[in-house]
Length: 219
Figure 1 (cartoon, one colour):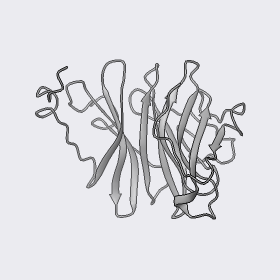
Figure 2 (figure 1 turned 120 degrees about the vertical axis):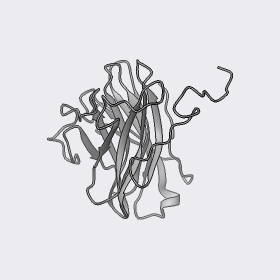
Figure 3 (figure 1 turned 45 degrees about the vertical axis):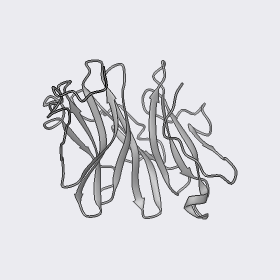
Figure 4 (figure 1 turned 180 degrees about the vertical axis):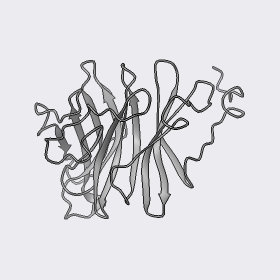
């Protein structure tokens, strides 16, 4: 409470875990039992990274009831780079992680996955019949405009609808630094694009000549 490092947590107040030869954590959330859920990227080899979700006990120890020794890798685009930056835990303890999947050097897409409490993919999440969805069972990607689409934040409303926001390239033919805009995706509780929100669940907010992107959200 006083802001000092808690020596009872992890090792002298810190957790250091390498789930690969190069691991980066970006997003963090707590579940109802104060377990710590972390997401980020783990490199498999040069030029290839997977998203990951890891869970730790309140003490800072790895939660061995989750995935394999507390760690779950998630691959959206095999042999390419995936990275997750945001994670949240639903009321039912299912975990949603989001970030990007690299389709090509110039095309990144929103990447979303939902895990069950034990770390397995939630196979009821997504819409395999929807065009634009890939890896539709438990994890999928959404392409806004065939350019850079990167998710940074997730929030779930009281009805279970899922909002994911970040930045998207308004016009892929323009220089990247000038064409990034705020973007929001809304999904139904089942993981389908919400047709009554924006254009088939997608909204890009054009800020004129100034680039922008969201890093957090509130309802």
